[in-house]
Length: 314
Figure 1: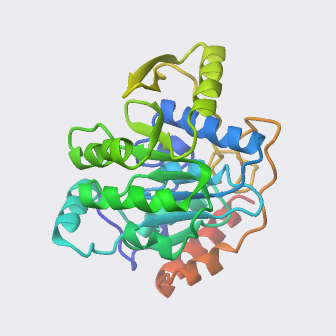
Figure 2: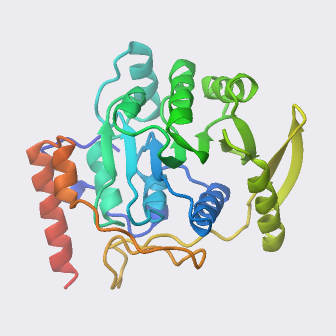
């Protein structure tokens, strides 16, 4: 697939009919854990916003956006089409994400939600200029794979999280991302990050107390019966390891492009718990895009695409 340019027609933007149509890597085990952590936070009325560093085409962002609660803010930070400020990061981004574009991300996200999240287009190192310290309850780090950048992302998120906030590290053990592994385990060994659990692709931790989370997680895992798990110890601290091969995925948000769909975009997955609350009224999509300095030609293309989609669905 060739990266889309601003003058290409809106019809060439992605039109996913379901979450699995969105390009990216977001496996069942991690979908289940995202859903479990977010549902537990809601059940316990834990306040805070959502944050994703590195969005690719929006797969995990779409999933997170369906769990946004009234009065909360979801911030997505990514370079998208912008060049990195250093040569090594530009080379790494070009090799890993040659098709990455902001327009494709927005088209994917708006297929499932009425409004875009707050978008910060730039290096993840600027995120603290846009998000207040101590306000984030759940953060997903999946940006640069370079050690220096990942280490900085972890330190930034440490300041942004609430006392009980959870951070998720992607590619913490991938062979092509040794910098992520080094930064993750350095944070555990030297910077107070406490592991909760791991899957084959993501690390889950907190700078708070992991014990209540681990106990509740093990109870939930036992109740399901379709998720293999065990408890290992790292430096005498417990760590839950799990695999969800063959397990049923959690409910997904519904796409406006789904055949016969009678729901509006932003239709949410069925509640995972009785404590789920209704979404708050947020900024309109166009205003959000404008605030993020989206070029006018791109705005016109997206608006035109949305109008055509709505007309076709009548």
